[in-house]
Amino acid sequence: MKLVLFDIDGTILKSRRVGRKAVALALRRVSGRSIDATGVSFAGRTDPQIMRDLLRRACFSETEIDDVIIECLKSYVAVLMQMLTPSMITILPGIQSLIHILHKRSDVALGLLTGNLQDTAFLKLHAAGLGSFFSFGAFGSDREDRNELPLLAAERAAITFGTQFAVEKTVIVGDTPNDIQCAAGYGAQSVAVCTGYFSRSELDPFNADLLVDDFVDPSPLFALLDDL
Image 1 (cartoon, helix red, strand yellow):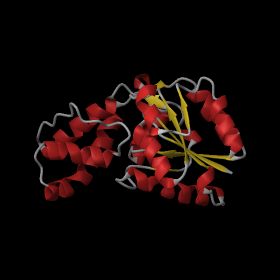
Image 2 (image 1 turned 90 degrees about the vertical axis):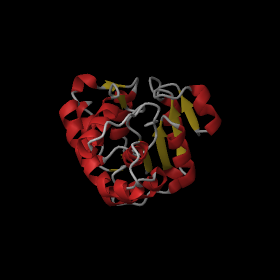
Image 3 (image 1 turned 90 degrees about the horizontal axis):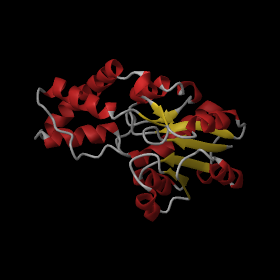
Image 4 (image 1 turned 180 degrees about the horizontal axis):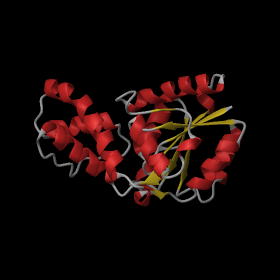
């Protein structure tokens, strides 16, 4: 079997940057300070990493950050639950059909590898009507370092499907350089899609195993899977 792990934001869907707004509001509620997220990249990073950077920007010490970050993350989940509606979600081109097809394939285990917290990942996916297609994954709430997530996802896939998944038969699908580098660091195949905030010219130097504009035509991804 092949293990296929999807990023969410910019790969499966976009949500009108509601996550950025929810993070800022959550941090303000917990810290009592107005925190400016302007210029801070969220793409391809875990939510705890983003929170830490924003708290540092607000002049919190590392000790202070350690004391409040768990509460900030909890607040973020609560705020996003209040703010997010299905009307804010845009499913990216070709994704809905692609996920349906992969979910039906007997040789594919379909999972998540995302910097989102597990709770916020499924909030977004359920708002998109796609939450039921993913039974396992690895999340920003598991590890702050994205590069530690592939092994964890593979371990959870093994438990879910009752079989081990070879690294060389693992595919990580994302829309940022961090997704490509995460796959390379694990030894997995990387599939990069230009539906997020990085263009083809920006992604091309990172040498993904497959680089596509979108998944309207999923045949290049299917060909890669069939060759594994």
